[in-house]
Image (cartoon, rainbow, N blue to C red; front, side):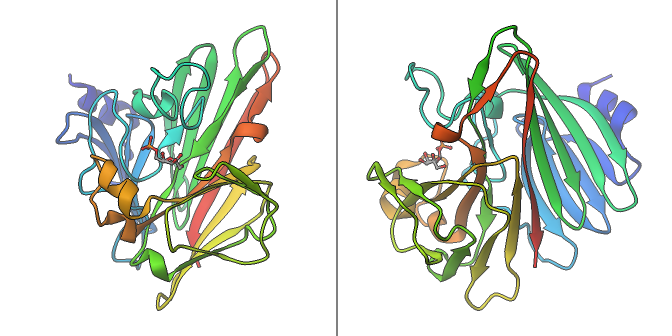
Length: 290
Ligand code: TA6
């Protein structure tokens, strides 16, 4: 019996949740219920797409040049950046954004509630035990809990690096982060926060440091707004690579910066998580249309 056959025997939920082999050979979970359709890879516990009912396309951006391969990150959807964010603090030979997004996670449970499909995947590495819980329904919830399995205190960073699909970045406005201090990653400057919404006119790469209840991504001439409700999070990264950086990314089209905006629920840098031995922390977000 193949891996996919075994997964379907153990975890499929009639036509609501099934498993298949992606063209890349990686294993894909497919959700198909009245409330939504979605795809998720066991590789990186990576949500690739999420299309709520009555919407013609996924709310998540996926690059046309995304690479699907063991050990490689996927450009789009919701990469889980863990246990560090960006370059490794001391070893530049290690992959950017940690090892969680390029590892195969183990499916440990699936469930069907009245209006959701739930998947739970696990990854154990370096005495850090992670569980990613995904709830697909009229809204999408992702929660990543991390337990310190060692007998000494541990620290980590985490970012749910969500790529939103938009029509044009120059029409986008992000609200909910007003007056939150942020680090401009490009200029390496600390800003006290601004009493304005965020608009995009150049490469933008900011780490907002503060807890917020709701972030709204709006787009001029678009009826729907994307709502992000973070939990267990004291950082939010806002990113668009713009023109020059896009050209430098091999797995990203030169013009694709126009169609995406990253809003990342996180705990990074000064807000990294510190766990005592045996302690657990969960970082999560609910994403929905308004
Ligand atoms: O979240 C913003 C960021 O840290 C940017 O600096 C950029 O590097 C982006 O992540 C993508 O990183 P990746 O390793 O996926 O190419």
